[in-house]
Amino acid sequence: MELSAAPTKKSKLTLYIVIALVLGIVLGFILNKSYVVEENKKITELDIAIEQSKAEIHQTTDSVSLIQFQAKKKALGKERNAALAAREEKTSPFSLLADIFLRLIKMIVAPLVFTTLVVGVAKLGDIKAVGRIGGKTLLWFVGASLLSLLLGMMLVNFFEPGIAMKLPLPDLTDETGIVKTSLSLKEFLYHVFPASVIESMAKNEILQIVVFSLFFGVATAAIGEQGKIVIKALDAVAHVILKVTGYVMNFAPLAVFGAMTAIIAKQGLIILKTYSIFIGEFYFGLLTLWVILAFAGYLVIGKRIIQMIKLIKEPILLAFSTSSSEAAFPKTMEELQKFGCKDKIVSFVLPLGYSFNLDGSMMYMTFASLFIAQSYGMHLPLATQLSMLLVLMLTSKGIAGVPRASLVVIAGTLATFNIPEAGLALLLGIDPLLDMGRSATNVVGNSVATVVVSKWENSLDAPVSAS
Image (cartoon, rainbow, N blue to C red; front, side, top):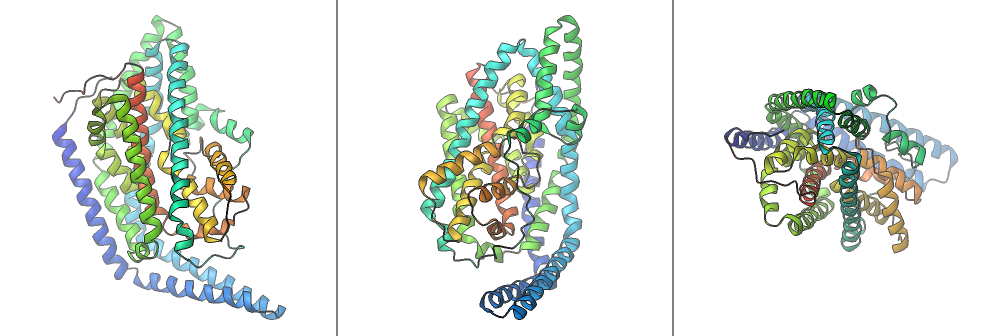
C-alpha cells in the first residue's frame, strides 16, 4: 500500500494547526479574563473557604462543632462543583469542536487498524513471520516502557517537586472521582481477548481488534488463492479509509483551536505559575526521553532518525494540541509509510504500540506517583520504588482505551502502596496540560519503535518520492 506525498498541502495544514494553536491560546486567555471570570473567581474563593473549613475540622475538639464543620465543607464542595459545571457549560462550544474531531478520528481508527493489519499479516504469509515480528516488537516495547518508567523515577527523586512546591494537601477523605484499575490477571485477559469483534470495534478497543485481526490475517494467508481476493478487497478499503482520513484532517485546525481555547479559558495562565516547578520538570523529563528515544533510533537506522522526526511533526503537533495520541494515529501511519516503512510492519507495530508502548504516559506514572508520596512526606525505599515501577508496568498494559488512563492506573498503584489517593487532586487541575506532552511523546515513541522494527526486518526502504 504505497502512499504518494503531497508536501504543499501537508505544510499548509501544519501551518494552519500552528496558527490555530496560537489563536486558541490568545482567545482562551481573553475569555479567562472576561467571559468566565466570575466562575473562576467563585471557584478560587470556594477553594480558599474549603481550605479554611479543613483547618477548622482539624482544630476542633467538640463533636457537635465537628459535625457542623464537616457539613459546611460538604456544602462548599457541592457549590464548587456547581461553579465548575457552569464554567464547563460556558466553554463547551469550544470543547465541542475538539470532541467532534476526535469522534471522527475514532470513527476511522477501528476499520483502519483492522484492514491494514489483516493485509499486513496476510502479506507476511505465515504464523512464524508474525511471531518473529511480534517478538521483536514486544522486546522493544518492554525496553522502552521500562526506560520511561525508570527515567520518571530518577527525575522525580532528583528534583523532589513534592517537597519543593509545599502545596496545601487534600484531606485523606477527599474524593478524586478517579476509579482505580483492576490488577487481576482475569481482568487483563478479558481486556485483551474479544468476546465480540463488533463490540470491540464499537468501543474502539484497539488491542482486541489487533488480536482478531491477527487471527483473520493468518487465516486469510492460509487459504491461498481465495485469500488473495480478501486481501485485495481489504487493501482497497484501507485506501478508501486513508482518503477519508485526509478529509477529516482538514478539520484538525478547528479542533486544535477549540481545544486550546477551552483549556486556557478554564485554567488560565495562573496555574502555570502555581505549578511551574512540576510542569517544567515534567516537560524537561519528556524532552530527555525524546533525546534518548531518538538516540536509540539513531543506533539502529542512523541519521535518518532526524528525517523521521521532521516527517511526523504534524502528528506530534496534533497529538499535543488535542491531548490525544489516537487523534494522530491515522496521520502517523501515513507518514511512516512515506518514510519508507513497509505497510505490513506499520500496520502491525503501530496499533500494538497504542496499547503497549505509551512512553510519555509511562514516564508520567512514576513521576506523578512519587510526587504525591513526596507531597505527603512519605519516604519510599528504593526497593519499594522498583516494586512500584513493575506494578505500573503490568497494570498499564492494554488500557489505552480507558478515559484518563494514566490517572486510573496511578490511582490503583497509590492504593497498592498505601499512598493517599486524595493526592491525585493535586494533579487534576494541570492534568490536561501534562496530557498534551504525554500524547505527543507517545507518538514519538511509537514512531521510533516502528522504524526500528522495520529496520530489523529489512523492511525499511527509501522515502516515498513526492508526486
